[in-house]
Length: 340
Image 1 (tube, one colour):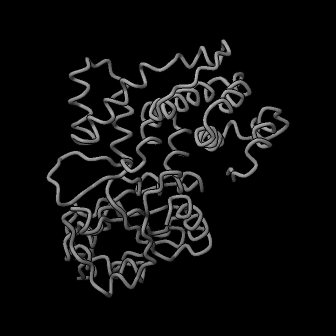
Image 2 (cartoon, rainbow, N blue to C red):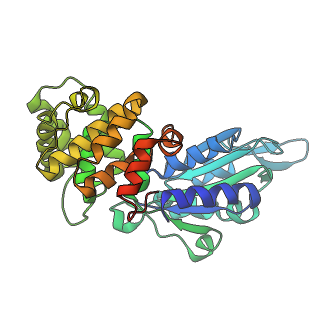
């Protein structure tokens, strides 16, 4: 399931089927917890409680036993990280790293996932349960879940989707060098290979780390080593080479503000100039029409790429599509292409 599909499904399920536990399967670094947290925020839930199940012991879920001298009974204290019984708050209870938890911890969750209780403790109707974990193929140290536990969930497999990632990245101002390179080498958005011993490898998470690296004032040699240490040797060298291409581009401000129709010849440079122009338009919509006009000077595939990516900026969509003469002209010249 693509991230956009997961968001649509979850919003419907959390509102209209709130007692159904969901298990989200996916590789590391693809945004399982971040996307789920964003869903909680979008729905205006009161709390998002993130519990790392692999850090707990079975007794942590049940609580410690205490002796009640008045009743001559043993009772279990409620863990502080679980919502108070009877709460009216809308809460998303997120059990992360579920598959990394030992079988004893997983077994302790059996009653919680189906009956929504552990011993005397019972979840309120306003509490939703979502769990997440990696699989064996991800190189994670996971424990196989029992069939009875698996049978308590709706299982969702979250895939890496490049277009979904781009939409998120453009609306979070991710460095244009990162986006230009990934348009050029989209296969490197996620590239984990279990049979290769490498501490670092590309994932959406580590590309965000690269974005933050670009904000540091590092010398070239230091920057190269840091990049390799973030996304791996091969991808790091490729990205560093692309950075030099990006820095040697024609000035995108000359193209947009001085109306210079400079079209790079190499494919890698064209990917880079598209990304550079998009980053300026996102901050200054006064050059929107000029950017669209310039895109029509590019080879067809890059013009289409430019428009597809431009429409991913949520704050620009209305200005692009409503009474925009440059966009209307672009559509007439490219009517054979479907633009979302």
